[in-house]
Length: 325
Ligand SMILES: NC(=O)c1ccc[n+]([C@@H]2O[C@H](COP(=O)([O-])OP(=O)(O)OC[C@H]3O[C@@H](n4cnc5c(N)ncnc54)[C@H](O)[C@@H]3O)[C@@H](O)[C@H]2O)c1
Ligand SMILES: O=C(O)[C@H](O)CO
Image (cartoon, rainbow, N blue to C red; front, side, top):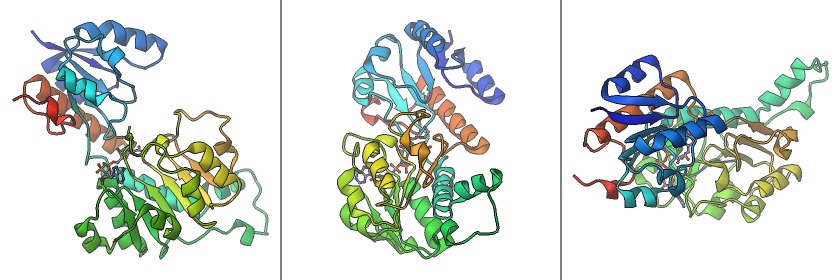
């Protein structure tokens, strides 16, 4: 008999066909109240789950006594109770690598958009406010040649460093768990303590995962170390930042601008003070959202899930301690 898989993410027709060949599939089309009720109904017989953007905690997992594998369509795994999954022997997989370049592109889009005030000035033109007096009040700041600071020198951090170093002639400084000699060699990057990076970088970019150690890592004390020309970019997770402290720094103009793809609470509330600030560019968590990359992520997740359900070790196993060959 085929194993049961619950999808809470729509797949392309070819991927759906592949999954349906191997498993009995239930698709939950949206995670609204009705969808969540459907999900709860489907969990008791599920062997596999595939999706993203759902907090899978012990309470929900307890509804799924037969669960063998969860394939997340994301690289970040902060939505999962990993200890509990491991305790239950449920294999959790993610989708690293395939989204690295696209997410770094998003980081760079935010760097350019904030420094050159692309959204603000495009909106001005659209509103019919382009008069002849374009002058210093509308000027931005250069990107090329400025110091790029990267916090979390992993896959995405490295791809950002590559763009800054080769594309924009930027000196790169970084803070991470430990120095990365190869990155230093390839991009001339220099390892710094966190306070030194915050003081020296023109662009402070977060590319860390959200963990117990990184939650609230950047707060009032850290914003105070940045200068009035600093531009803050977050493509990691909103909760790495104390959002109230960020809003304060932007309102007081103790930093110049922020490019944000992720927020403490998502979707971002329409009345968030961030949206009233002209020096903020906010995007709706679309770091990896291109047609090509989202398809590659979904393919990767399907591969991981099918491997796990066939008793093989998934390529991108996160909780390796749960693997019992
Ligand atoms: N905005 C988006 O749509 C989007 C897309 C993809 C990934 N992300 C986020 O980006 C994160 C990074 O992805 P990645 O593939 O580069 O991961 P990665 O594991 O390759 O890199 C993370 C880096 O952060 C470092 N790090 C972790 N904790 C640290 C700490 N406390 N202090 C210093 N350094 C620390 C690690 O050593 C590692 O080098 C993901 O976990 C996810 O949250 C967001
Ligand atoms: O972690 C990731 O892959 C992205 O943030 C999408 O959730």
